[in-house]
Image 1 (cartoon, rainbow, N blue to C red):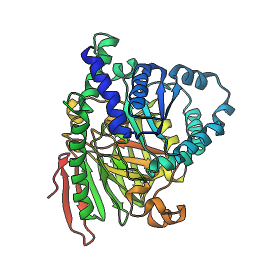
Image 2 (image 1 turned 120 degrees about the horizontal axis):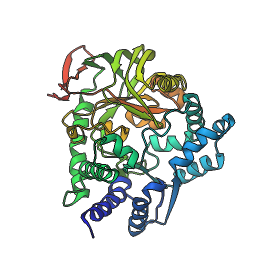
Image 3 (image 1 turned 45 degrees about the horizontal axis):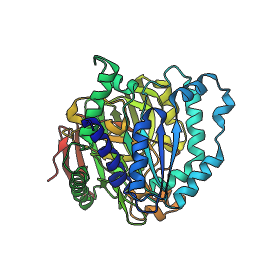
Image 4 (image 1 turned 90 degrees about the vertical axis):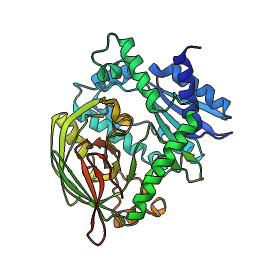
Amino acid sequence: MSQFQQNLEKYANLAIRTGINLQEGQTLVVNASIGSADLARLVVKKAYEAGAKNVMVEWNDDVVTRTKYELAPDVAFTEFPMWRAKGFEEMAANDTAFLTIYAPNPDLLTGINPERIATNTKTASTAMSKYREYLMSDRAVWSLIGYPTVEWARKVFPNAESDDDAVAKLWDVIFETTRIPAEDPVQAWQEHCDKLHQVAEILNGKQYKQLAYEAPGTNFTLDLVENHIWAGGGAVSESGRPFRPNMPTEEVFTMPHKNGMNGTVRSTKPLNYGGTVINNFSLTFENGKVVDFSAEEGYETLKHLVNTDEGSSRLGEVALVPHHSPISMTNLIFFNTLFDENASCHLAIGNAYPTNIKGGTKMSDEEKAAHGVNQSLTHVDFMIGSAELNVDGITKDGKREPIMRNGNWALA
């Protein structure tokens, strides 16, 4: 067996054992593109070896997706197969685990009318909202791993000698940042996540009222909800089972108050949103709401994103990532939020994770609104971190304490 094949086997095993933490007798759904079939087949094998009752693969294809956007009538983007939405809800309610093998083409929908993309995204998000609630409240176990397409690899390594060389380079980075070269990747992940838990616990002990950000193009304050919870290094399902939603992960994150953002933030990395790149953009907030924005690339897409619904003009997540994280130290721009968000401090437009506030998973929508929890059909992370970012925590009595200096931890 080649070294690459050994690493691919370890990667599939890590996804099942650590990402999903699959239990004997559990059902698994794998969402995968046809281009990632080799990894998907290995994942299915590892799942059955771990005792899965059943493994179902939901395939998708970029060519089919692009063809629909080019040729389908407008009405096609206002419809969603509700049998599919109900099926995912039913599976989530019955303790099914969900693994996505994310194999993106960052430029897949370049040139497509942004209004079509926005309509389709809103239609699908509305139909799948109850299923998404299971995931965002940790009532269902889920995980996301990356797979390099030629298009993605060429975007990251434009000067590679060939397509195969670009893909090989990106595989090396994926393996390295998910700790595959370790003698025991599962143990390496446990040790890494323990460190993230420790940082989260320090911040939970502080219970800052507000965070203040300063960097080139960024001058911004953000209120945190009362009784907020910092999380990092994975999640714990409602049934008490630990899992890792994102692989890789380097973040600790919590919940901003939906009415508590003021000032301007500027992006530091491109955002790949639904097959379209938004780049060099800024957002200006007043009392939590976006009141102005700009973008050198992808302006119309950004416009449709922040106008998806009332909550999409507000923030639902704030995340801190040190500039010296392993992914950041690659000095690569990934054009892929799974990787870029774990190389950079970031914020998320849209829906908040109810697990980031005490008692949040038991709150009604009305109770969430009263506590400042943002609610939206969308949740989109964008990166604002750099080696020039300073972040302060402001206590309830007004004391200002350093959290990050020059992009790295400065916690006392």
